[in-house]
Length: 279
Image (cartoon, rainbow, N blue to C red; front, side, top):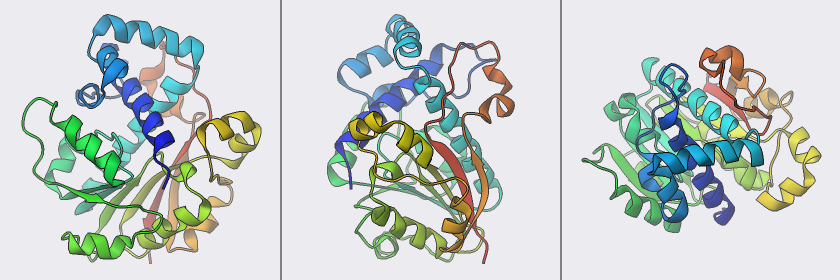
């Protein structure tokens, strides 16, 4: 499983989330008091100093248009779908390739169910060390499993850690798939499709037109997998999953009126999809 590029992009996204602290509440898409504490070095210093955050926010929109807007909109969509899944009866949560995901530490709804975070051993060790800097007690419902989702048997690993495959489950697979070869993504689809009816998979993916149209970025970021949105329903159905929603940059303004008046570029990079086990 890829690690260096994933960790680099995780730092960038965590930084973009931290910048939301300076947005007026009426226009803010999310509240994330955790991400700033997960960052170290220069990103961490910037995230914890308001003037530096404001400067970076302006520079990011000029130098990397679309990165900030896409990152926070993606985060908000997944936040919303996590809340929806729990309200609909999900009894447990699995975060695959958890990276610097702050969701289990900031969404109150996740505190009521067991959460398993899976990631490569080195990446997970860095995150757990960073969590020691987060003020206050950490949630007691989070369990950590060192794993490589491309090769490790997810069902067996989770079962040994107390996971109950008979319960409706929310699976979050954010910003990982494009860094894995297609054969490395398939085990996640197979496993998610084997879960209890009503279980949901939230994933981000790279549209193949983006990968084809941005060859230099594809090489730079190590993108390995991409999917045609028109073919995604069939791909998921082959693994027992029904696509319920698939959104991208063109959908965010209508979903989130808070974006009005904000100088944020939205660019098609990753899409966010929601699938459900419906057998």
